[in-house]
Structure formats: structure tokens, C-alpha cells
Length: 211
Image 1 (cartoon, rainbow, N blue to C red):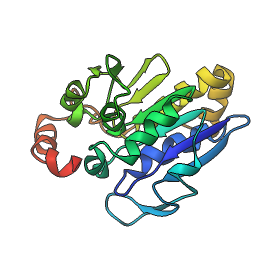
Image 2 (tube, one colour):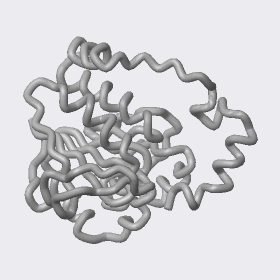
Image 3 (spheres, helix red, strand yellow):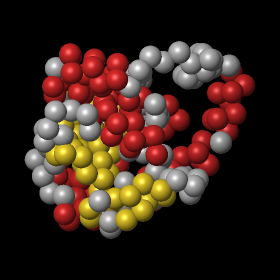
């Protein structure tokens, strides 16, 4: 089972690494990091590089595709080689997944038309213009498409997907092995629970955060 994780310049690293850490533990998993060209790809602040093993043209029929998000997504919304590749591999995937604003890339490629999907809460209003049906949920399944909300939701998505692929016991073992038992110090992980001034501050910086 080949699992392809897309990389692009100025991605959010956890969007890719979180699902990778979970899905690479599946029995028989062969995980490949793929980008337009092989080599290092920098995160949005430029201080961390992930290394792509393969170019887009070298990965044609993955069983699972994971598309992360991050500010660099904004520069990739126009139809082009990446969109063509997404459509090509999606024709053969068993599962097509995204994290955060990665769902906007799937939408821009025409893959979420009429489908329920989620994304980072700051970008939720950008889903409908791309043909998707916005869902204010942390993880959304619609057919073979599974989308996760912002950043950390990618871990939840990957665990839920692992359960669909290999069964709940396997997914639970992966979760336990990672000791994934979130107990955050603040109730600020959602605009519904975070203090209003914090929400307002992020909203005021939305364009800078998303592009």
C-alpha cells in the first residue's frame, strides 16, 4: 500500500508529519514524500526542511494521498501541473485526504465538488466557492475523501483513516504507541472556546496567516 504525502514550499510541517507518523505505521505501508521536484522543501517560516523522495511524475498510483496545507497553498490555486497530478492520482486512490487548507487545493482541482469538507476555521469561507459543502467539523468523511480541520486535526484524521484501512485495533495500537492523549493547557483550540480577543486577533491577521 503506497501512501503519498504531498510537499510544497511554505507548507505547515505538522500537516504532513502528523499524518505521516500515523499512516506510516500501518501494516504494509510504503510512504513516499512527493513534490514538484525531489529534495528539501521548507516550511512556512523557512526554518525546517522536509525532504521529498520523488517528483510528481514518479508517483502515479498511490493508494492513499495526503495533501497538507499551509500559507504556500495560496500560490498553488491556479490550475496547473500540480492540479493535473492531483486529478490523475485521485482517479486511482482508495483514499484522498487533506489537512487544513490542503482541502482548498483539492477543491481547486475539482475533486470536492458537491462533497462535504472541512478546513482551517480561518479559511472555511473559501470552500464553497470551490464547489465543496463546508462542514464545521474536525474530521469529515465523504466517500473516499477525508478532510481535516486545522493542523493538529491531521492526527485525528489519520487515526480515523487508519481505523478504516486496518481496523480499530490497529489504529488504537498506533494511537497508544504515540501516547496520543491530548490534554491541552488551554481551551483555546477552537474559535468557539478561545477567548474572544484571541479569536479577534487571529481574524485580523487572517490574510497574513493564510498567504
